Length: 134
Image (cartoon, rainbow, N blue to C red; front, top):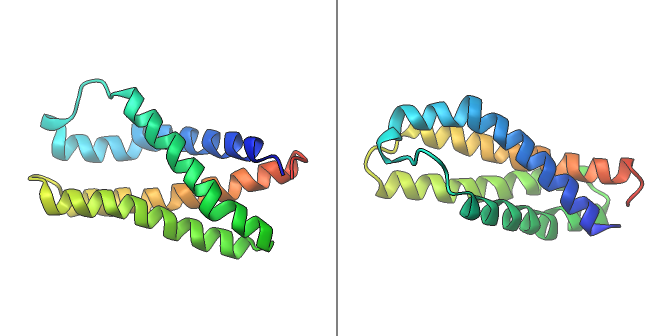
């Protein structure tokens, strides 16, 4: 399998879906609750570092082992756990330590991160197979 193609397809799916959600769902929820501490323009270097590392870890720890096992169920289940753990760490830490953080933010972002991670992992692997790189 071409791991590079798998990575590029997965990160593309992840970024496209997250850009839509950040604009239409996550952004409005966060803006309503914490706009006073949000930057007018996000810092793209830290965001890029997160996205690139996160998808790389997802590929290495979840997608490749599930593909080697030949199990779509294992892929979806482990991707959901991986997404929930990562996004949950961020959200619950903020809820525990930041004034103004709300349960609504936790619920929306945790649900989104879990879904985004699962859909990106499954779609990235499916596209890799579909285009003959597996």
